[in-house]
Length: 242
Ligand code: URA
Image (cartoon, rainbow, N blue to C red; front, side, top):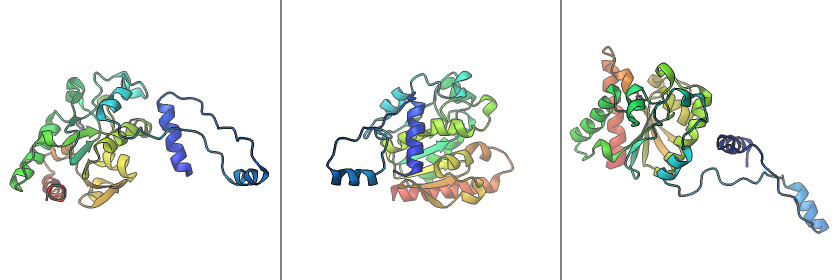
């Protein structure tokens, strides 16, 4: 296990409330075995990062009435995600806004209406029979940041573990990261969307496209960005459904 994997394990279990880990004692061994053991590092005994084969329902249950970060203080709902558990494509936004916090569902406000139009409109024009309910939509953080501010790195790290588990459970054919926060959480890249959009990257083994966040596209002077976002979405849909 490399140091980065170990760091991920430790922060995952810390989020779950574990404060101690124990190392397994080395057992009595013959001299030659002792030499072999001495050459091996002692690793902490930890269960796998996420239980294999877990369902979205189990992940939601694990989140519970989450208080792992400060975002729980002002939230009304935990906005876990919505759509098809076996979706071929997952859209990942930043975090719930006021409408989402009130309804407990992602992308139901103005940005959500635009996202729905983008998905269903592009699919229809491209001859792909696809409705919003066929895809899965979720966010990097599950609780609304106060005043819709950008989530802080520690909030993204804590809640990001659940996003990762959602993606592992669904295992879509492609992921579409909406905006810079989703791109940062999934790719660890800090560049702006203008730079990242339109190209394929990978989250683990899953192809990932970055495009503009629908809230950005709602601003009236972003006509070029709108056209580009539609192009990006076309690429995603053809990749997944052709
Ligand atoms: N913006 C997001 O990033 N996510 C939502 O769910 C709504 C608005």
